[in-house]
Length: 158
Ligand SMILES: [Zn+2]
Image 1 (cartoon, rainbow, N blue to C red):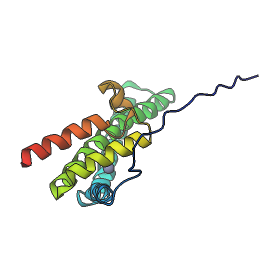
Image 2: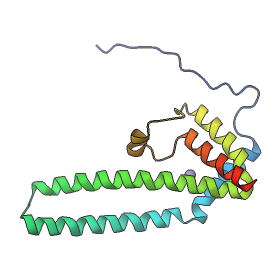
Image 3: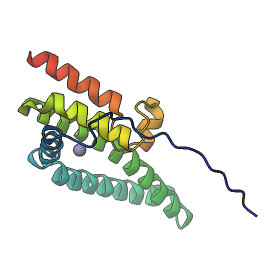
């Protein structure tokens, strides 16, 4: 019989202000629209297509050269999934920084930072992570990384 454990989960302490302010919501929308402005979805489709074509070509070449059959298809599928997974996450994190930068250039740096803090607190996301772990597991940069990048941009524009 499985055991049941009950644990208390810390809840965010936002004081009087709960949720995002109007300016923070605008900053989040600016970030999301920046993805559209920077054509991130279209670029992702092209990159994934190129990677799949390259992997298929390489696999066919190795198959013919080394005479691999059957079992190697499984290895190829796994390798492709790993490469696309890692590459996809790397590209996704890069695009998040770019969208943050674009929203910051539009003047939403400060409210975007406070929105990220609130959203991160609300979802109980750990604010910092090991770089290698993050590279393999996170589609978004950590909150600390994003805040630092936004701070840097805001300082440059002063
Ligand atoms: Zn984003």
